[in-house]
Amino acid sequence: MKIFTAYIEYDLETKLYVGIVPSIPGAHTQAETLDELQTNLKEVLELCLEEYGENRKN
Image 1 (cartoon, rainbow, N blue to C red):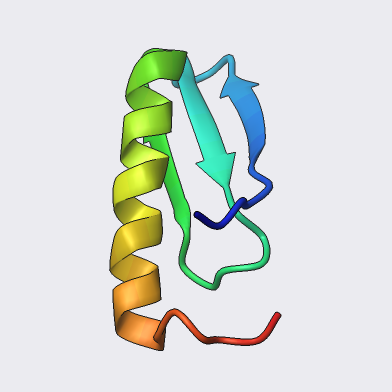
Image 2 (tube, rainbow, N blue to C red; image 1 turned 180 degrees about the vertical axis):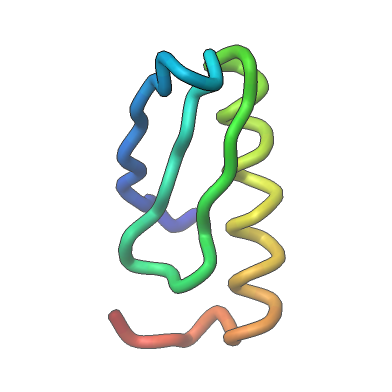
């Protein structure tokens, strides 16, 4: 299992949590709750790793 660092902010205008994984291009998402954001981040990470290959060097 790989571990990634995500940065999370709460946007007061949209009332959404926004999360990005800076080490993976394109890995960003948003959600209304932190639980939903965690699920979305996992999904986007899986998609990005599939697209770029899991052996991508940081």
